[in-house]
Length: 213
Image (cartoon, rainbow, N blue to C red; front, side, top):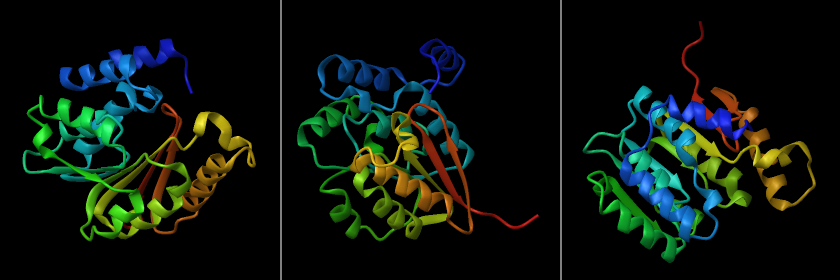
């Protein structure tokens, strides 16, 4: 959503992921198909800031890919916190585990290899942060689940909610329309504070509203 030069300037002035995360990102970009799915350093920095600001301890992530975002988030939660991350791809999650094992924060990460909705059906606990970055056609379903499993001061972050700008043109394809439907559902939530940020490919932040002033 901004020029690469401006993004790099912002990254150079921000808290950045560790060498372990950067090495995982480099490997993914060099060797793994679909590396555009990485959240990148700018979004990782924003997530780190939110995690520390909200004193997040437990995280649920939908969409592991090669584990970059899971490790980037795990670095900023307490030693007894956890990141539960869900994906169906055994090949990319094996890469994730290899790099997680090289980091002192990798032990905080728990992997579930199941389709998203199937995995969520077996989880009853609440989370301080729910990060949605999986199959776009289920975004509204994931949001419904997240709203029911959010801790009192919890935060939902939904990635790719601008979808390369395609959200401005309904009817392009099923994925675009699914994201548009999710964005409308999030916008219309009552009792929540919401903001859709033009960071990377769009970050939608959703939190239970506090008291009226």
